[in-house]
Image (cartoon, rainbow, N blue to C red; front, top):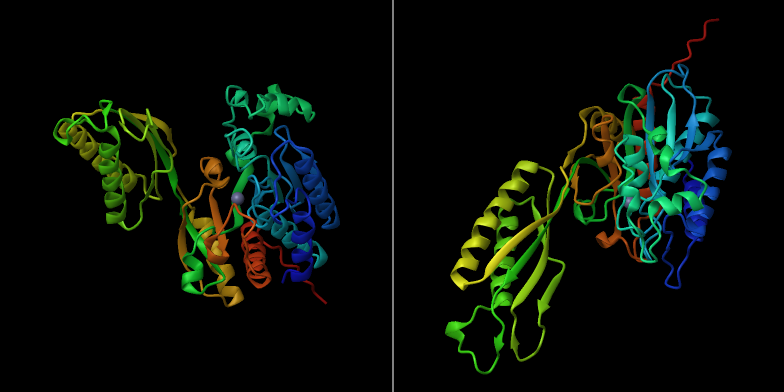
Length: 415
Ligand SMILES: [Zn+2]
Protein backbone atom coordinates (compact mmCIF):
# COMPACT_ATOMS: atom_id res chain seq x y z
CA UNK A 1 0.00 0.00 0.00
CA UNK A 2 1.22 3.46 -0.84
CA UNK A 3 1.71 6.19 1.78
CA UNK A 4 -1.34 8.40 1.31
CA UNK A 5 -0.07 11.28 3.48
CA UNK A 6 3.29 11.44 1.73
CA UNK A 7 1.66 11.47 -1.72
CA UNK A 8 -0.84 14.17 -0.70
CA UNK A 9 1.90 16.25 0.95
CA UNK A 10 4.03 16.15 -2.19
CA UNK A 11 1.06 17.14 -4.35
CA UNK A 12 0.61 20.19 -2.09
CA UNK A 13 4.32 21.08 -2.20
CA UNK A 14 4.42 20.87 -5.99
CA UNK A 15 1.27 23.01 -6.26
CA UNK A 16 3.18 25.89 -4.62
CA UNK A 17 5.48 26.19 -7.66
CA UNK A 18 4.01 28.53 -10.27
CA UNK A 19 1.00 29.19 -8.04
CA UNK A 20 -1.41 31.83 -9.39
CA UNK A 21 -3.59 34.38 -7.55
CA UNK A 22 -6.60 32.11 -7.98
CA UNK A 23 -4.76 29.09 -6.46
CA UNK A 24 -4.14 27.50 -9.84
CA UNK A 25 -0.71 26.89 -11.38
CA UNK A 26 1.08 28.23 -14.44
CA UNK A 27 4.12 26.10 -15.24
CA UNK A 28 4.92 26.42 -18.92
CA UNK A 29 7.75 24.34 -20.33
CA UNK A 30 11.32 25.61 -20.11
CA UNK A 31 10.45 28.40 -17.67
CA UNK A 32 11.98 28.95 -14.20
CA UNK A 33 8.75 27.56 -12.67
CA UNK A 34 8.99 24.34 -14.65
CA UNK A 35 12.70 24.04 -13.76
CA UNK A 36 11.89 24.47 -10.06
CA UNK A 37 9.16 21.83 -10.34
CA UNK A 38 11.59 19.41 -11.96
CA UNK A 39 14.16 20.04 -9.22
CA UNK A 40 11.57 19.33 -6.53
CA UNK A 41 10.41 16.13 -8.20
CA UNK A 42 14.05 15.08 -8.69
CA UNK A 43 14.50 15.48 -4.93
CA UNK A 44 11.44 13.26 -4.32
CA UNK A 45 12.89 10.69 -6.73
CA UNK A 46 16.16 10.63 -4.75
CA UNK A 47 14.21 10.23 -1.49
CA UNK A 48 12.52 7.27 -3.17
CA UNK A 49 15.93 5.72 -3.84
CA UNK A 50 15.79 6.18 -7.62
CA UNK A 51 18.65 7.02 -9.97
CA UNK A 52 17.82 10.44 -11.44
CA UNK A 53 18.70 11.75 -14.88
CA UNK A 54 17.41 14.04 -17.63
CA UNK A 55 17.48 12.91 -21.24
CA UNK A 56 18.20 14.82 -24.48
CA UNK A 57 14.68 16.25 -24.75
CA UNK A 58 14.50 17.34 -21.12
CA UNK A 59 12.47 14.43 -19.73
CA UNK A 60 13.13 13.95 -16.00
CA UNK A 61 13.62 10.26 -15.30
CA UNK A 62 13.84 8.27 -12.05
CA UNK A 63 14.95 4.64 -12.46
CA UNK A 64 14.61 1.62 -10.21
CA UNK A 65 16.94 -1.11 -11.42
CA UNK A 66 15.59 -4.55 -12.24
CA UNK A 67 17.04 -7.89 -11.17
CA UNK A 68 17.77 -8.19 -14.87
CA UNK A 69 19.02 -4.70 -15.87
CA UNK A 70 18.92 -5.67 -19.55
CA UNK A 71 15.25 -6.65 -19.50
CA UNK A 72 12.92 -4.17 -21.27
CA UNK A 73 11.96 -1.31 -18.97
CA UNK A 74 8.46 -0.60 -17.66
CA UNK A 75 7.70 3.10 -18.07
CA UNK A 76 5.24 5.09 -16.00
CA UNK A 77 4.74 8.77 -15.21
CA UNK A 78 3.00 11.83 -16.64
CA UNK A 79 3.90 15.53 -16.86
CA UNK A 80 4.48 18.48 -14.52
CA UNK A 81 4.01 21.33 -17.00
CA UNK A 82 0.59 22.98 -16.98
CA UNK A 83 -1.65 25.21 -19.07
CA UNK A 84 -2.09 28.91 -18.12
CA UNK A 85 -3.74 29.00 -14.70
CA UNK A 86 -4.37 25.25 -14.70
CA UNK A 87 -5.04 22.82 -11.87
CA UNK A 88 -2.84 20.93 -9.43
CA UNK A 89 -3.68 17.34 -10.41
CA UNK A 90 -3.44 17.18 -14.22
CA UNK A 91 0.02 15.63 -14.63
CA UNK A 92 1.50 15.84 -11.11
CA UNK A 93 -0.80 13.03 -9.91
CA UNK A 94 0.73 10.54 -12.36
CA UNK A 95 4.33 11.56 -11.71
CA UNK A 96 4.10 11.71 -7.91
CA UNK A 97 2.04 8.50 -7.65
CA UNK A 98 4.67 6.69 -9.70
CA UNK A 99 7.46 8.03 -7.45
CA UNK A 100 5.41 6.96 -4.42
CA UNK A 101 4.83 3.46 -5.83
CA UNK A 102 8.56 2.92 -6.43
CA UNK A 103 9.46 4.37 -3.03
CA UNK A 104 7.17 1.85 -1.33
CA UNK A 105 8.70 -0.99 -3.36
CA UNK A 106 12.17 0.12 -2.29
CA UNK A 107 11.12 0.51 1.37
CA UNK A 108 9.68 -2.99 1.35
CA UNK A 109 12.70 -4.46 -0.42
CA UNK A 110 10.59 -5.53 -3.38
CA UNK A 111 12.60 -6.43 -6.46
CA UNK A 112 11.31 -6.80 -9.97
CA UNK A 113 12.62 -8.64 -13.01
CA UNK A 114 12.29 -5.54 -15.21
CA UNK A 115 13.71 -2.08 -14.48
CA UNK A 116 11.06 0.60 -13.88
CA UNK A 117 11.35 4.27 -14.84
CA UNK A 118 9.18 7.18 -13.72
CA UNK A 119 9.15 9.89 -16.37
CA UNK A 120 8.04 13.51 -16.02
CA UNK A 121 7.60 14.21 -19.74
CA UNK A 122 8.67 17.53 -21.22
CA UNK A 123 5.79 19.78 -22.29
CA UNK A 124 2.75 17.53 -22.54
CA UNK A 125 0.26 20.39 -22.61
CA UNK A 126 1.53 22.42 -25.56
CA UNK A 127 0.43 25.62 -23.81
CA UNK A 128 3.61 27.54 -24.61
CA UNK A 129 4.46 26.54 -28.19
CA UNK A 130 1.00 25.35 -29.32
CA UNK A 131 2.80 22.04 -29.84
CA UNK A 132 2.68 19.48 -27.07
CA UNK A 133 3.88 16.03 -26.02
CA UNK A 134 7.46 17.02 -26.81
CA UNK A 135 9.05 14.61 -24.31
CA UNK A 136 7.00 11.59 -25.33
CA UNK A 137 7.61 12.30 -29.03
CA UNK A 138 11.32 12.36 -28.16
CA UNK A 139 11.14 8.96 -26.49
CA UNK A 140 9.07 7.56 -29.37
CA UNK A 141 11.73 8.87 -31.78
CA UNK A 142 9.20 10.85 -33.81
CA UNK A 143 10.20 14.40 -32.79
CA UNK A 144 11.65 16.25 -35.79
CA UNK A 145 13.93 19.27 -36.24
CA UNK A 146 11.11 20.97 -38.13
CA UNK A 147 8.79 20.60 -35.13
CA UNK A 148 11.40 22.31 -32.95
CA UNK A 149 10.81 25.47 -35.02
CA UNK A 150 7.37 25.99 -33.44
CA UNK A 151 7.47 29.33 -31.61
CA UNK A 152 5.86 30.80 -28.50
CA UNK A 153 4.13 34.20 -28.43
CA UNK A 154 7.48 35.96 -27.88
CA UNK A 155 8.90 34.36 -31.01
CA UNK A 156 11.12 31.92 -29.07
CA UNK A 157 11.27 28.53 -30.78
CA UNK A 158 11.37 25.16 -29.03
CA UNK A 159 14.95 24.84 -30.33
CA UNK A 160 15.85 28.22 -28.73
CA UNK A 161 14.30 27.06 -25.44
CA UNK A 162 16.30 23.82 -25.64
CA UNK A 163 19.56 25.76 -26.01
CA UNK A 164 18.67 28.17 -23.20
CA UNK A 165 18.16 25.12 -20.97
CA UNK A 166 21.40 23.39 -21.86
CA UNK A 167 19.93 20.92 -24.36
CA UNK A 168 21.24 20.39 -27.90
CA UNK A 169 18.48 20.41 -30.55
CA UNK A 170 20.69 18.25 -32.80
CA UNK A 171 20.84 15.52 -30.13
CA UNK A 172 17.09 14.79 -29.82
CA UNK A 173 17.50 11.44 -31.59
CA UNK A 174 19.47 10.12 -28.62
CA UNK A 175 16.36 10.28 -26.40
CA UNK A 176 14.57 7.73 -28.63
CA UNK A 177 13.97 4.25 -27.23
CA UNK A 178 13.74 1.08 -29.27
CA UNK A 179 10.65 -1.17 -29.05
CA UNK A 180 12.78 -4.05 -27.70
CA UNK A 181 13.95 -1.79 -24.84
CA UNK A 182 10.46 -0.98 -23.51
CA UNK A 183 7.99 -3.48 -22.06
CA UNK A 184 5.02 -1.17 -21.48
CA UNK A 185 3.86 2.30 -20.49
CA UNK A 186 1.15 2.98 -17.93
CA UNK A 187 -0.02 6.39 -16.72
CA UNK A 188 -2.30 7.46 -13.89
CA UNK A 189 -4.24 10.66 -14.64
CA UNK A 190 -7.36 12.53 -13.63
CA UNK A 191 -10.35 11.80 -15.85
CA UNK A 192 -11.10 15.45 -16.76
CA UNK A 193 -14.69 14.36 -17.38
CA UNK A 194 -17.74 13.26 -15.39
CA UNK A 195 -18.06 9.58 -16.26
CA UNK A 196 -16.54 8.14 -13.05
CA UNK A 197 -18.36 10.69 -10.90
CA UNK A 198 -21.62 9.62 -12.54
CA UNK A 199 -20.84 5.95 -11.83
CA UNK A 200 -19.77 6.74 -8.26
CA UNK A 201 -16.38 5.08 -8.81
CA UNK A 202 -13.02 6.39 -7.59
CA UNK A 203 -11.10 5.04 -10.58
CA UNK A 204 -11.44 3.34 -13.97
CA UNK A 205 -9.43 1.68 -16.72
CA UNK A 206 -9.00 3.63 -19.95
CA UNK A 207 -10.14 1.71 -23.03
CA UNK A 208 -8.50 4.04 -25.53
CA UNK A 209 -7.52 7.61 -26.29
CA UNK A 210 -9.65 9.49 -28.79
CA UNK A 211 -7.65 11.04 -31.60
CA UNK A 212 -8.65 14.58 -32.52
CA UNK A 213 -9.46 15.47 -36.10
CA UNK A 214 -9.29 19.22 -36.65
CA UNK A 215 -10.90 20.77 -39.72
CA UNK A 216 -11.33 24.36 -40.83
CA UNK A 217 -14.49 25.25 -42.76
CA UNK A 218 -14.28 28.33 -45.00
CA UNK A 219 -17.58 29.65 -46.37
CA UNK A 220 -17.67 32.40 -48.97
CA UNK A 221 -21.06 33.95 -49.61
CA UNK A 222 -21.96 37.48 -50.60
CA UNK A 223 -21.68 40.65 -48.56
CA UNK A 224 -24.80 42.82 -48.72
CA UNK A 225 -26.62 45.66 -47.00
CA UNK A 226 -28.74 44.33 -44.14
CA UNK A 227 -31.54 46.73 -45.03
CA UNK A 228 -31.45 46.72 -48.81
CA UNK A 229 -31.07 42.98 -49.58
CA UNK A 230 -34.29 40.92 -49.58
CA UNK A 231 -34.08 37.58 -47.79
CA UNK A 232 -34.79 35.64 -50.99
CA UNK A 233 -31.60 36.72 -52.78
CA UNK A 234 -29.09 36.44 -49.95
CA UNK A 235 -26.00 34.22 -49.83
CA UNK A 236 -25.36 34.56 -46.11
CA UNK A 237 -22.18 32.74 -45.07
CA UNK A 238 -23.11 32.78 -41.38
CA UNK A 239 -26.62 31.29 -41.55
CA UNK A 240 -25.17 28.66 -43.88
CA UNK A 241 -22.44 27.91 -41.31
CA UNK A 242 -25.10 27.64 -38.60
CA UNK A 243 -26.93 24.96 -40.60
CA UNK A 244 -23.68 22.98 -40.92
CA UNK A 245 -23.01 23.29 -37.17
CA UNK A 246 -26.40 21.73 -36.43
CA UNK A 247 -25.53 18.82 -38.75
CA UNK A 248 -22.24 18.36 -36.86
CA UNK A 249 -24.07 18.20 -33.54
CA UNK A 250 -26.68 15.80 -34.88
CA UNK A 251 -24.27 13.40 -36.62
CA UNK A 252 -21.88 13.22 -33.64
CA UNK A 253 -24.73 12.63 -31.19
CA UNK A 254 -26.18 9.77 -33.31
CA UNK A 255 -23.15 7.54 -32.65
CA UNK A 256 -23.26 7.84 -28.86
CA UNK A 257 -19.44 7.91 -28.75
CA UNK A 258 -18.28 10.65 -31.13
CA UNK A 259 -17.92 14.21 -29.86
CA UNK A 260 -17.88 17.19 -32.21
CA UNK A 261 -17.15 20.79 -31.20
CA UNK A 262 -17.10 24.08 -33.07
CA UNK A 263 -14.94 26.26 -30.84
CA UNK A 264 -13.80 29.06 -33.13
CA UNK A 265 -15.86 31.22 -35.48
CA UNK A 266 -14.75 34.25 -37.47
CA UNK A 267 -17.32 36.37 -39.25
CA UNK A 268 -16.45 38.94 -41.91
CA UNK A 269 -16.93 41.82 -42.37
CA UNK A 270 -18.54 41.61 -38.89
CA UNK A 271 -20.81 44.65 -39.07
CA UNK A 272 -24.23 44.81 -37.38
CA UNK A 273 -25.86 45.95 -40.61
CA UNK A 274 -23.89 43.83 -43.09
CA UNK A 275 -24.75 40.34 -44.34
CA UNK A 276 -21.73 38.13 -43.52
CA UNK A 277 -19.78 37.42 -46.69
CA UNK A 278 -17.19 35.09 -45.24
CA UNK A 279 -17.16 32.73 -42.26
CA UNK A 280 -14.40 30.48 -41.00
CA UNK A 281 -15.06 27.96 -38.27
CA UNK A 282 -13.18 25.10 -36.69
CA UNK A 283 -14.28 21.54 -35.99
CA UNK A 284 -12.77 19.24 -33.38
CA UNK A 285 -14.10 15.70 -33.93
CA UNK A 286 -13.09 12.76 -31.71
CA UNK A 287 -13.81 9.11 -31.14
CA UNK A 288 -11.70 6.19 -29.89
CA UNK A 289 -12.67 4.38 -33.10
CA UNK A 290 -11.09 5.90 -36.19
CA UNK A 291 -13.68 4.14 -38.39
CA UNK A 292 -16.62 5.69 -36.53
CA UNK A 293 -14.97 9.11 -36.45
CA UNK A 294 -14.24 9.04 -40.17
CA UNK A 295 -17.79 7.94 -40.97
CA UNK A 296 -19.15 10.91 -39.04
CA UNK A 297 -16.72 13.18 -40.86
CA UNK A 298 -17.85 11.85 -44.25
CA UNK A 299 -21.53 12.44 -43.39
CA UNK A 300 -20.77 15.99 -42.25
CA UNK A 301 -18.83 16.73 -45.45
CA UNK A 302 -21.59 15.44 -47.76
CA UNK A 303 -24.31 17.43 -45.98
CA UNK A 304 -22.17 20.56 -45.69
CA UNK A 305 -21.61 20.55 -49.44
CA UNK A 306 -25.33 20.06 -50.05
CA UNK A 307 -26.23 22.93 -47.71
CA UNK A 308 -23.70 25.26 -49.35
CA UNK A 309 -24.97 24.40 -52.84
CA UNK A 310 -28.53 25.20 -51.75
CA UNK A 311 -27.47 28.52 -50.24
CA UNK A 312 -25.19 29.54 -53.10
CA UNK A 313 -22.18 29.65 -50.83
CA UNK A 314 -18.70 28.39 -51.73
CA UNK A 315 -17.25 25.84 -49.32
CA UNK A 316 -13.63 24.88 -48.67
CA UNK A 317 -12.61 22.42 -45.93
CA UNK A 318 -9.00 22.32 -44.79
CA UNK A 319 -7.40 19.53 -42.74
CA UNK A 320 -5.56 21.04 -39.76
CA UNK A 321 -4.71 17.89 -37.84
CA UNK A 322 -5.64 14.23 -38.11
CA UNK A 323 -4.49 12.18 -35.13
CA UNK A 324 -5.25 8.46 -35.09
CA UNK A 325 -7.06 7.27 -31.94
CA UNK A 326 -4.94 5.07 -29.69
CA UNK A 327 -6.57 1.94 -28.27
CA UNK A 328 -5.05 0.90 -24.94
CA UNK A 329 -3.19 -2.41 -24.96
CA UNK A 330 -4.66 -5.58 -23.41
CA UNK A 331 -1.40 -6.22 -21.51
CA UNK A 332 -1.78 -2.97 -19.60
CA UNK A 333 -5.57 -3.13 -19.28
CA UNK A 334 -5.35 -6.68 -17.84
CA UNK A 335 -2.60 -5.70 -15.39
CA UNK A 336 -4.78 -2.78 -14.25
CA UNK A 337 -7.85 -5.03 -13.95
CA UNK A 338 -5.87 -7.42 -11.70
CA UNK A 339 -4.82 -4.42 -9.60
CA UNK A 340 -8.46 -3.32 -9.11
CA UNK A 341 -9.35 -6.90 -8.13
CA UNK A 342 -6.43 -7.17 -5.67
CA UNK A 343 -7.59 -3.96 -3.99
CA UNK A 344 -11.25 -5.02 -3.99
CA UNK A 345 -12.20 -2.03 -6.14
CA UNK A 346 -14.95 -2.18 -8.74
CA UNK A 347 -13.48 -1.64 -12.20
CA UNK A 348 -15.01 -0.16 -15.28
CA UNK A 349 -13.72 0.91 -18.68
CA UNK A 350 -13.99 4.40 -20.10
CA UNK A 351 -12.50 6.24 -23.08
CA UNK A 352 -10.25 9.27 -22.82
CA UNK A 353 -11.51 12.22 -24.81
CA UNK A 354 -8.33 14.16 -24.11
CA UNK A 355 -4.93 13.42 -25.61
CA UNK A 356 -2.06 12.18 -23.42
CA UNK A 357 1.59 11.20 -23.81
CA UNK A 358 0.61 7.55 -24.23
CA UNK A 359 -0.68 8.36 -27.73
CA UNK A 360 2.84 9.18 -28.81
CA UNK A 361 4.16 5.90 -27.37
CA UNK A 362 1.52 3.73 -29.05
CA UNK A 363 3.89 2.44 -31.74
CA UNK A 364 6.79 2.03 -29.29
CA UNK A 365 5.22 -0.23 -26.67
CA UNK A 366 1.98 -1.54 -25.18
CA UNK A 367 0.32 1.49 -23.60
CA UNK A 368 -2.48 2.09 -21.13
CA UNK A 369 -3.93 4.49 -18.58
CA UNK A 370 -5.84 4.57 -15.32
CA UNK A 371 -8.16 7.47 -14.51
CA UNK A 372 -9.38 8.76 -11.17
CA UNK A 373 -12.55 10.77 -10.60
CA UNK A 374 -12.46 14.52 -11.30
CA UNK A 375 -14.83 16.68 -9.24
CA UNK A 376 -17.52 18.06 -11.60
CA UNK A 377 -15.31 16.94 -14.48
CA UNK A 378 -13.38 20.23 -14.30
CA UNK A 379 -9.76 20.50 -15.44
CA UNK A 380 -7.36 23.08 -16.89
CA UNK A 381 -8.77 25.37 -14.22
CA UNK A 382 -7.90 26.18 -10.59
CA UNK A 383 -11.14 24.41 -9.59
CA UNK A 384 -9.68 21.08 -10.78
CA UNK A 385 -9.99 18.66 -7.85
CA UNK A 386 -9.67 15.01 -6.93
CA UNK A 387 -10.05 13.86 -3.33
CA UNK A 388 -7.21 12.53 -1.22
CA UNK A 389 -8.94 9.14 -1.08
CA UNK A 390 -9.31 8.94 -4.86
CA UNK A 391 -5.64 9.90 -5.30
CA UNK A 392 -4.75 7.11 -2.84
CA UNK A 393 -6.87 4.55 -4.73
CA UNK A 394 -5.30 5.62 -8.02
CA UNK A 395 -1.76 5.37 -6.66
CA UNK A 396 -2.46 1.93 -5.17
CA UNK A 397 -3.85 0.72 -8.51
CA UNK A 398 -0.77 2.13 -10.25
CA UNK A 399 1.50 0.40 -7.70
CA UNK A 400 0.00 -3.03 -8.35
CA UNK A 401 -0.22 -2.48 -12.12
CA UNK A 402 3.45 -1.50 -12.38
CA UNK A 403 4.47 -4.33 -10.07
CA UNK A 404 2.73 -6.92 -12.22
CA UNK A 405 4.09 -5.46 -15.49
CA UNK A 406 7.63 -5.42 -14.05
CA UNK A 407 7.17 -8.95 -12.60
CA UNK A 408 7.80 -9.07 -8.85
CA UNK A 409 10.55 -11.48 -7.82
CA UNK A 410 9.50 -13.86 -5.07
CA UNK A 411 12.21 -14.60 -2.54
CA UNK A 412 12.08 -18.26 -1.59
CA UNK A 413 13.94 -18.74 1.67
CA UNK A 414 14.77 -22.27 2.81
CA UNK A 415 15.58 -23.12 6.38
ZN1 LIG B 1 -2.37 15.87 -18.36
